[in-house]
Length: 542
Image (cartoon, rainbow, N blue to C red; front, side, top):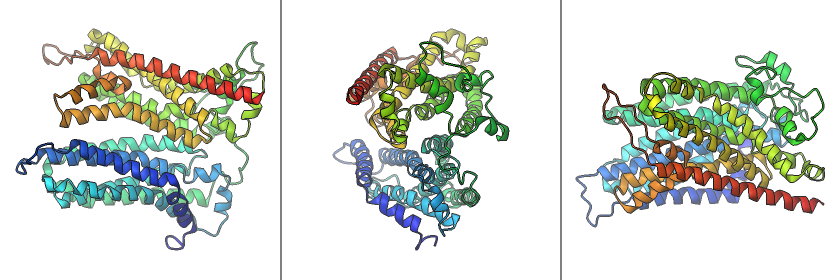
């Protein structure tokens, strides 16, 4: 019932592993990792095996890259396991079947992790090619893979657990990422800090990691099973709108008062009067009803998780060690990358899913009104939520400390964050215009933003590690003009004083100015493309 004769597991495996995208993803994953190893392979005609530092760096880069890729892909496989049933209107039929809740959860979990496990195992031949270079033993490779499989399994369970609490895959996906990414970064930092311990680090991975991961998975599995055994949303098929007033009274912890400041900035109250003359009904509908029709649980979790993480980063990066101020800005950018697309990726696809897009296109509302109404509604929510994390930066500029002489740099940080908010919203709306499902649109948005923002950072790190002081390293540095992370770290920062002399960091204004120019051109190009799509659809509708 749980494994061998689990129809949920069998159905999910047959569906997922027989789809063309499974083979495309496997090819792309192995090709990417193989390309990294090929580019970083030592170029010497004769290798000195007595100095295996380069080989060790290559293997570490391979593992860290694979670990982050697997961590990022885990929610995409598991976050829609249960919400997908709700979106397909098959959730109640699944619960009414003879299957036990535990069998359903385990079937969904193993089906989601099986594909990810295949990707991880298929990368083994690539890392085996690096073993003859020295520096890393077969035992270390086994321990690293064991720890990676255990933690990625935990990330899959976190995503499945989040999927049991929401009715939309987009909400489950963003909450999963907010919980998984900090854990993944902590795991990487702990692994690096324990590097000097040698065998003790390997022993800890073999003993402590499985105990922690299995214990947390068991707790979340139990919670998800209870959620399916006593579902609070059973019988709500067709009832998609949540009463926000009742939800606010029943909410535990943070709740949103839509008629008070600052909550009304991102969640205005429902309209009780007629629209003003010339107002955009699309914008008003999206802001007051559409975005929050499924409740505010996801929004409340996002605010609480981000604020808790921001308190520690704010204290460490802005006040205790001001030299790490760019790292806090990077956290703000990462938050917007995760949260921003959620409020725009379903703007057009939701109309398609409800079969109301054709009705919308034959109204008197022009395509331009539709476009800017949907764009500004999602951009307003994401930018206000992101601005909540920027108040420590503004406070730091007001205090008499190192930041007084760095006011142009702090202004540059704000410009980078604002352009990032615009880029994520426009990209999500563009993906929503060309895809038919909200989940597909959201994942495509994350993929585009991840490639555009993180590829320059990875390329720069790779070039400085293996091609230092070469033309390739210089080209990789200039590629950072399309990434807000590279632009943030390119700004100069002077925190030197009589106690800490020589701590000024010289910046590269070409990266910052290039990022501004790229962001303007990129967003204008996407807006023009969307206008063309809307107008073409408009003519077809006429």
